[in-house]
Image (cartoon, rainbow, N blue to C red; front, side, top):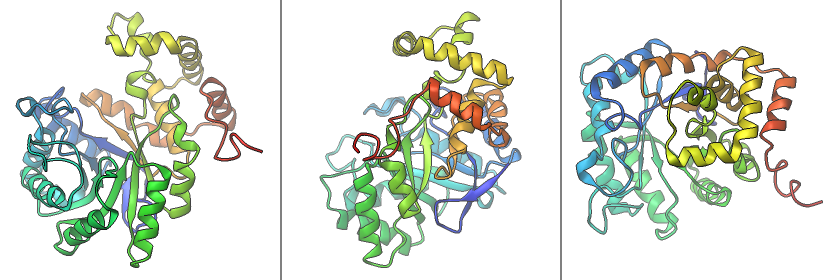
Length: 328
């Protein structure tokens, strides 16, 4: 496994991060334990969670909110693991029904952090990420809440997720005015089928030295050999089938290219992301140990310039960075 710095920090993390969104919802605790064991044995030291993971991300407490963190906590409680991983989780989503049980008020951030620490059975979170931007809460309030958690030793680094480029710039300029590090990382939707962040988010991250952690790296399964799997008898959800029908010619060309390379489509999709110098780690969110084993190959997969050019032909981006992509 290769390791790199988390953005401009001195912290080193594996190029693959273990995503735990399926733990508690699609993957039971026993299998989740096996996945985490195999990830650690495979060199993955970066585990990504969120307080809301473990059930559908809508307000239904009976369906497992917090279950993913609880499973990770039970795994950590076996001993000998906490200091071997970089543990990341998130705050923002509604966790209960009260008006202050969501978003990024200082009130909610404090309570949410303490609840995550209890579920994770640890005394600190290495990377605490704002799951979404909250424009209804002043930047000063959010920053103050995060600084307080750092002072108390409850979190070490602060990250963001689903931020626009100007949100990232605002956060970093505000931090710089106080001689603080600011954001260490940003999680954004980024894969071969979704390349919008190449316009402004990626340039902003590169400028400020913030690491990119792409989520949905295989496009909710689209880039995992979906046509082949359907041909083998697997069934796609209605939502996925709509995307398959829309993108069928590109998917056919993509899977044909992967066949020519002799590589699994999911590995090619992950490797493409990891060729981008702004990307710190891509998130692998396996439901099974077998899926994890497959993804472990991706960091060592080197794609030639010719292959990268062919991928651009199949999955064209927005045309470069703003404003050159759309203006003279």
